[in-house]
Image 1: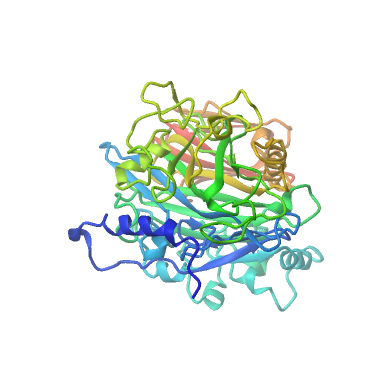
Image 2: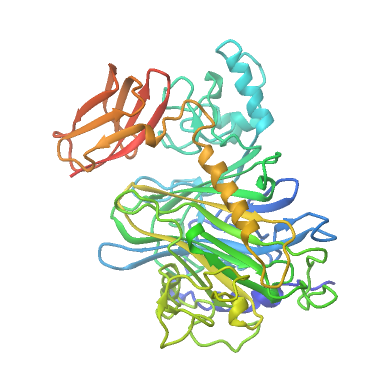
Amino acid sequence: MQSNPNFMKLATIIFCSLTLIPFGKIQAQLCTPATSQIDISTDRVQVRNLVAGSLWWDGTGEGRFLVDDPELSSQPTSAALAAGLWLGGLDEGNNLKLACQTYGLSSGQTDFWPGPLSDNGIPIPNACENFDKIWEVKKEDLDAHIADYEDNGMIDNPIIHPSIKSWPGKDNPLSLANNGFELPAGRDLAPFFDVNNDNKYNPEDGDYPDTRNADVAQWWIFNDNSNIHSETNGDPIKAEIAVLSYTFDDDQVNQNSTIFYELEITNRALEAIKGFYVGLWVDPQLGCYEDDYIGCSPEDDLAFVYNSDSEDGDANNNCAGGGATFDNGIPLFGIKILEGVKDADGVAQGMTSFTYYNNNGVGGPWPAGTVDPSSAFQYYPYLDGRWGAGTPFTIGGSGHDPYGDATRFVFPDDPSDPTGWSQCTAGSAEGDRRFIISSGTTTLLPGEKTNVSYAAIVTGAVEHPCPDISPLIEAANDAQDAYDARLTKNKNILLATELTIHPNPTNDIVNIQNSENEVIESLTLTTVDGKIINHFTDLNDSNYQLDLSNQAAGIYILNIKTENGKVGNNKVVKY
């Protein structure tokens, strides 16, 4: 029987994780760990998506970010072993709230479970079972549905594709027949284009999933408050996370090597969470996991992985730990933050730290406090740009010098720059390093959302050692362009740059102006959970003054429609 090539990587982590749950916290399970997983693919990469917090592996130790390119390898080869979502912040009493995923799935331990939460952060009955699923839509099926509606303004094809009928858009009346359950009433779930503007998803009316015009799109939703946090033993945030993942498999440069992820994170707790960070934890495995180097380009909001020498594995391209290697050419692997956590002024912050820690079972010995986190309080510092022990990362070497100058970004220079700080110039010993790319902070009020989006990118072969990362930066820029263009793929999207809303926050009057001088046809003011407060029609002007003086302090959503059919929404704060 062939041994698992990644067993040694997982053994220490699983053992430590099992010892983290105090006996007093072992109780009857409210929700069991998610089981659904599905691949999303292009003609070069095949990537595993999982429902609840984990990505890119199968839950048993096998990497599933596979690159199938004969110019790189004679067989499909992994670029990463696993990834996981990390969330952390503080409640109003400065108590740590944390949800992070690494390898707990292999032993049934998790901080996340399938499904949405209620508006007060409580699990919705049966959501765990109903939403242990990833919904997928393909472009050819979507195009056929849209064409059916556009030819005469109605859906008259007797057969709507099952993926469109089952799409969990708000109040989909076909869900029971096609998913086996009714969707939670009135809840915004999977994104869609609302053709008749009735604020409900009904494909029989011509509505269709918003897939960013991708060739394949997948959507799922999960939360961190459906059981105890057995991965970190942290206290729950009561966060709800919806994910849209998609790919383009066309002739656009580099896009057939990129997987996109859009996350919408909602605070379902009844109190604010401050100091809130969103991080993506990655255990890279660029072929052989024992000779990977890592780095970042802060100005590009980009983290990357490359090989420490000119051969992946040993001189014969064999990996001592087992597994396929890039035996024909070594690529670069990168994670690009396309949209980061917005600060109090609504400005996206991008990558605010890049940190790492060492696998204690490979290489070393490593200094104390620089290895796998062993308690909830050792996760949050990595999100905040510090070592797990709370000490700062420092400039130079391994980033662990008690007397060095503090930094939030380790190895921030191009490996090909002999004067920069990279693992190449530092001469780092070979090892197995996991990194965290973080964005924050912000304060999320009850019911408030924040959005974070990533692109996971694989390049073609790049000369090693100490490679020039410009091909990866070019691919990351292409991914950013594709992501930004999603806003203009549909002519009915009203861009934020087309509106001026001021003052915001306001105590009474807010001025709304369309910078393109398009007539504003209607305005709808709602609460953050979708309750309609006011609806104004027949405005017939590109400017409007909205009086909020009689409204309670809080956050409101302003939905705007122009005479040309463009729609958009903006957040307005009343103090």
